[in-house]
Length: 294
Ligand code: MN
Ligand code: MN
Image 1: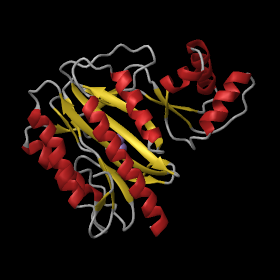
Image 2: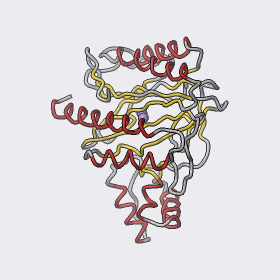
Image 3: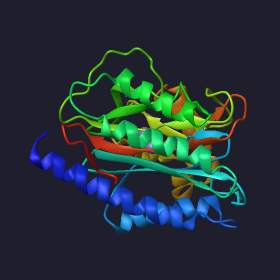
Image 4: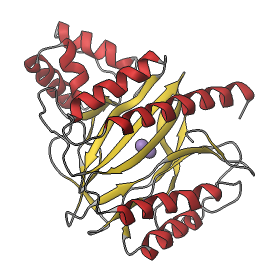
């Protein structure tokens, strides 16, 4: 990785870290999930950061990919709230997440993912097999009496790319891929009191445009031209409904879907409705691993 790229990762990491801390402070009983998300996203814009994906708050048994719609009235109470956000600088992404326990009775569950992450980050050195990191994550979480979520994983980042190989598993998946010097990777252990497996459940509110095809309707084309500037990075339905009506938004999304250019990210929920905690940092692989979001 050249010096200029490293500087951009560092800047993205510092901004993501600040935004996550800001968001954490807003997660309180009585607060609106939508409002927190909007404040966090505004906070990132105010720092001149760009959103690598929509800020998300997933509650209780929902592990990831939950983003409220514009008319959402979800209010925090005693949930286990995971806040996950990504900031990019010229396409270089920092991805980070943490969990807040408003239930006040699941501190061990939070510790499990936090300690698994801590142990995994120390291993982010050139030459290590990704399955060894997964094994460490699995053992740490199991030692706390919980299950790692096996079908969610960390990932390698690249310019305007959130997920490139290799994945960083949350269990020993026997993948012999080795980390390489200068890779940017996101490590994100999830600990569950339930199945340790997630399934897609409910309507997606997070999407990405995978390729560009011509569209005929004017406002749909305007929306698409705007979304293209995201270079394939995800966007949220509530972003669209700030500039377009709900009917227009629904129509456009259907058009994109029909053209097969729309990628959907539905909420991911523990199959047995167990409670889920998550911790995530982005780290640059080197002998002395550099955690850019810490
Ligand atoms: Mn994340
Ligand atoms: Mn991630």
